[in-house]
Structure formats: C-alpha cells, structure tokens
Amino acid sequence: MYSEKVMDHFSNPRNMGEIENASGVGTVGNAKCGDIMRMYLDIDENGLIQDVKFKTFGCGAAVATSSMATELVKGKTIQEALKITNKAVTDALDGLPPVKVHCSLLAEEAIHAALWDYAQKNGIEIEGLSQPKTDIHDGEEEETYE
Ligand code: FES
Image (cartoon, rainbow, N blue to C red; front, side):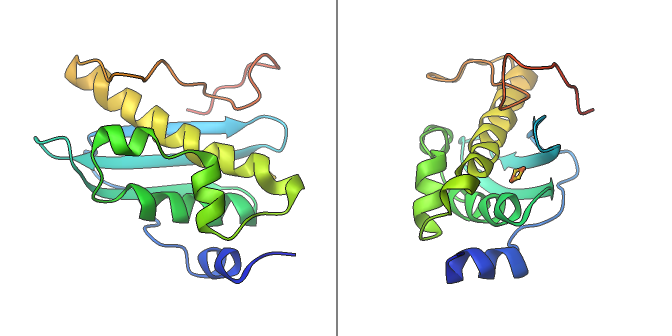
C-alpha cells in the first residue's frame, strides 16, 4: 500500500525537531482527523532556507510527507519553497494511497504558514503568498492549535 520511500521517511523521519528562534514557524491542522504539523524555518539574510525542522502529531503519511517536505525545502530560496506543492512532495515519495493524499496538504500549508510568519516578523511581503489557512479543512469548524 505504501511505497518504500514513504515507509523509509515514516520510520526514519529527516529533520524532526524544532529550531530555537526560528525565522518562521507555521502550524497547520486538519480538524477532521485531528492531526497537526509544525514547520520551523531558518532563513538567512539572502533569503535562503538554511535549516528546516518539523514536528508532526499525526498519521504515518503526515510524518512521511513532512519529512520529505523538509528535504525539498532545505537550501532553497523563499520563492522556490513557495512553489513546492503537495503533489511535488507526494511525487517525491513515489505516491500515496488516494485516501492519504489529503495528509500531504498539511506539509504544503505548513511551509506556507512558516513563510507567512517569517514575512510578518520582518514586515515584508512575499510575492505569491497570501495568508495561509490554519486548518486545511477551511470553512468547517474553526480550531486553533496554539
Ligand atoms: Fe490526518 Fe493523515 S490522517 S493527516
């Protein structure tokens, strides 16, 4: 059911943890399943993502997609990171079962949320980035995960 890459990233997640004084932190939840993902970015003065860490309280697919997302984001520019879609993350994992594809949305949104936080902290605008959702099931029950 799961690809070898998914199993690998689930069993040995890359970049798990947190960054103290991160440049940007984004937290996104999925109220339906109750899973939560938090992404930490360390961005240097040239706008390069030097380090990234994540914490995911969620299903195996959410852990594997967070892990892969951090690998894809590391070393990238803000604009490059912004273009990383959940499809890119899923493809990099050789796919997810259809019922689990929504889990990869957490990773995409968590990256956006962390970039948004970075922009807010620095009083800048990132082209192409609008305020991300805190819940990927927008329009349903409002939930906060602070
Ligand atoms: Fe909730 Fe996968 S079931 S993120």
